[in-house]
Image (tube, rainbow, N blue to C red; front, top):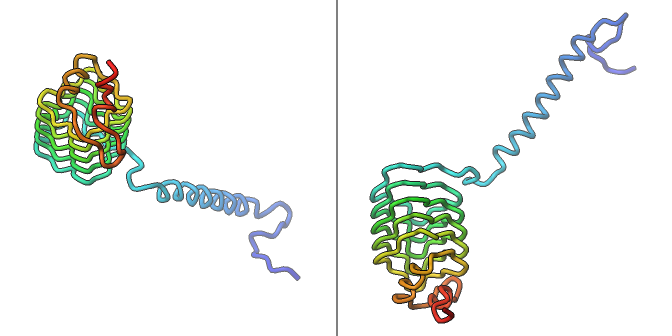
Length: 183
């Protein structure tokens, strides 16, 4: 003798609607649980934040993970990004005048057309960043790692004039990463 609910019994084709409804509910529950896993099981910063064109003068982003966030054309003068994880960030056309990026990781970031005037880049890692039209006038680059950074030749030459130190994270000499002695 098997246990059955009355709506599961097949009696002359009756009960099909209930069986169909239960199947649909089960399918929905399975999809919901799988979707919940993908929504809840991802890292905290799985979605990049868009700070494009925002006025963030003096903002404090120090020590934060901002991987892949976008600050395109944002006004970030005198902001603090010290010791932040900025891998893959876009600072395209951003104004970072007087900002503090000491010890920040900017690997593979988009820095093209950004203003790093009087910016502190001490011990920053910029490996693989794209900074072709970036302005580094008056920037402090002691111990910064510029390995494989795409720079204009005139900018590279000006940075070589002030380059000194070794990056404590990568162990690379700033002058060597800028290829100062190879030109």
